[in-house]
Image 1 (cartoon, rainbow, N blue to C red):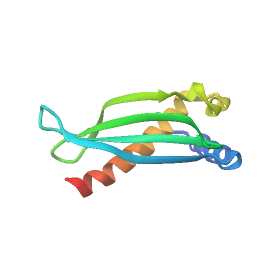
Image 2: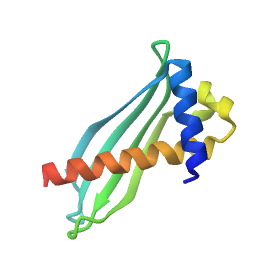
Image 3: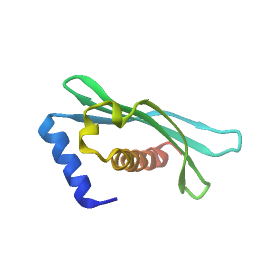
Image 4: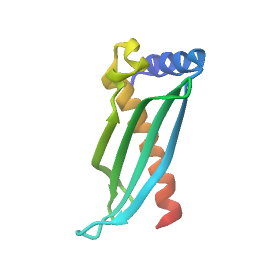
Length: 110
């Protein structure tokens, strides 16, 4: 991920008074016996939801994770974050944050 873009995104959100929440949505063991953790990612601007996605990750027995599924409730292109013009990079940024948080929960839960 481009460091300059990350800095720009963080500054944009800060100057606009935007906030984000990344929380555990659910965890479960799938039919193949893999542990899964789903994270909810929500970005707010003036009390309105500007971005909302669920990112789910499956973990191997060694603790390595890979993306298993997701759900988009409100996409980057539907809110103020679209003004950055880098929708894919914004998605990638929040995916990386969700991955980081999922790894932390994995250590606590399993």
